[in-house]
Length: 467
Image (tube, rainbow, N blue to C red; front, side):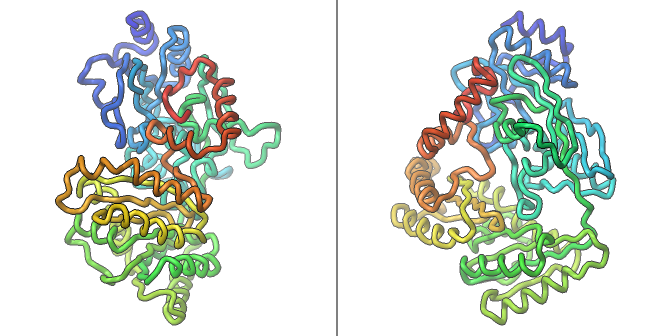
């Protein structure tokens, strides 16, 4: 592959191609697959033209290409697969915000732009980018679109694909399709951009995108609500949707175990309303100055208390208090990671099915693994749960993780029985390929393979992922 490296240096310059072992280490894995596989090198283009040239050179050399964003994935989707040397295509130097249009409410952003930078740029123009999640500081736009990222505001704004008006793609042979249009209506044939969003870089390489913007939020209200049961949480969701409509931005479920774990990470965090089985973090936003949403939220919660749906609630009285409430939710993943070995699930179900699923799954798992701790939290408003298990205190990591396959089968079988999905927002990557083959319909799998063969007949784009 020395000829390929030489050609890439001609295209990108010496600083655009990394080959030293120490330099490659940071591009090898992600949060779920830290070891990664073998690499030829890391290519770091600055433009779409350079990206096209890199992919064209790799196609000529029959070299696999692994597109990589911020490395925050949870399924091994942006890591070199074992058994074959791949070129890692990093977008860290393609991070420009090309344009922001406040008339069309759209922004054109390059693939390597961190989500937080795109959010801040929109905010400076009095606009809001509706995509938000815990890794916004390091995840990149290209990775967000490639995995159809979700997060805490999907209830109001939708997933990444719902927020994407157009994309720019480098195909497997190096050709560029520029579909950077901000049209809300374009009924001229197949909506090709949707093939590439959520495809994890296996069909084409996203280099830029046109994203929807919304008026910035001027009035907010945040509440933490205590509930006795999951059916009560579902009932509260329906009540708040009726009262607040699309001003209900987030509805985050937190179990008592998850909340205790979060507070263990930050012991100084106040413990609002301790001793309840379930909690919901509610976020409401309105672009109108002086909107009555705080009063509407307070009234709705008070009525829910009277009716026995809600046990107790606290509404933030300042931005600082709201931030502390959100910290209780946002610290859960890190707290669980620090606690030790854990088995993660990213599942989605119809909201109405969640109480029955949790009851059945809890019973099945605790019967088989009575020492496990169930860490349940997630985006109840859109039916997405992070249904995780942690080892009991003092249990050896190896002993606990030996049960991962059996635990996954219990959880995912029950998800399938309830008509849900075993991957709501994290994608398939390498980690969930066997699940895809096990749970997907044969016709659906064949359609996916047909699309892959049509767009990447030699299988050079992100090999070993999804299919």
